Image 1 (cartoon, rainbow, N blue to C red):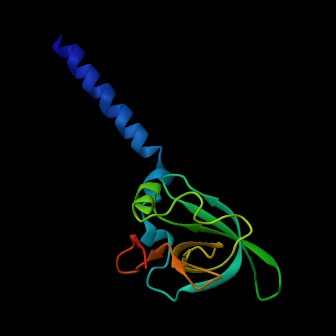
Image 2: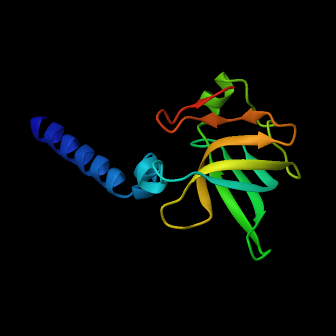
Length: 141
């Protein structure tokens, strides 16, 4: 019985280590400091929402933005999770495809067109999904 118990514990340890080692992207997605430049200049983007994905682990907004040459660039913006945003009164209809917005983001360190949303400004001037750089949790204003 004891040998069986030790074998089961060894198997459990192997499974846990394997699962941990194989989920690099899962572990890495929580490292916003590693992915986004939270200390640099915020980037302001004006564009059109093409997708607002209300899902976990993070709500995502996809917007199309014209760069300085007039080329359309698709930006992926990360927000907090649905629970945290729902507690602040947001939901899956907070943004919709076709809506014009200004997004202020912490740009991706890699240079990819991606960012951690600091705030979204609607056409009427209201700021939503506001995030403080010192405290990366969202807040309503």
